[in-house]
Image (cartoon, rainbow, N blue to C red; front, side):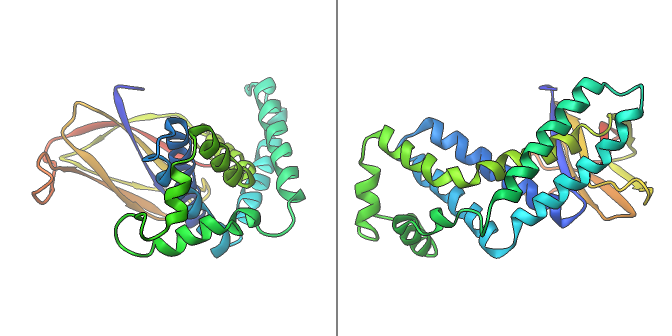
Length: 256
């Protein structure tokens, strides 16, 4: 769907957190792959942001609960003949493996990474506006001038405790996003509203919008309903306005 732009709106705090983590994991992977001294600080920022999630809340328990909930729901599909049983068995096996890995982890995720002296110093200096300069933290400047393969090795080592978290979040979101099909909808004069069946348990609203359209969706909602206002803003310096033409789009209500 390269000719479409995808917009997603989580309808609960758990999925909102998972989407933020997914973004951080992608950010880390991208900047580790590129590997320059300009990319490395961004990769480190992704690691420290993940650390913030793991230290502020029991994210491991939240992911584990959602994996187990999805696993139980999917188990019920085994007797349905219209379901691809081979694909279902593969998903269930992957979920079971991740659940076991998370359950085997004792204590807080990323404790060893949190204890890294260099990362701790970087986190402290990051509260000051602007980049960390060599006069702020000479040890960081020294590290940034190490060979690229050495820096990449250290980054991967710091990120390693979060691999199972990354795989688990990816699994949860993959199952959620594939839980339903797109429907063709139209927002009359740029406005769309929908009541949600509370028995459906929608967790994520997903919109695919043709990228030639000069508008974007602002989505707001909760457990019972959601609204979409398509906005136009060709000049970022100006205040956006509601699009006044009908907008065709693809809608997916994701629930497991």
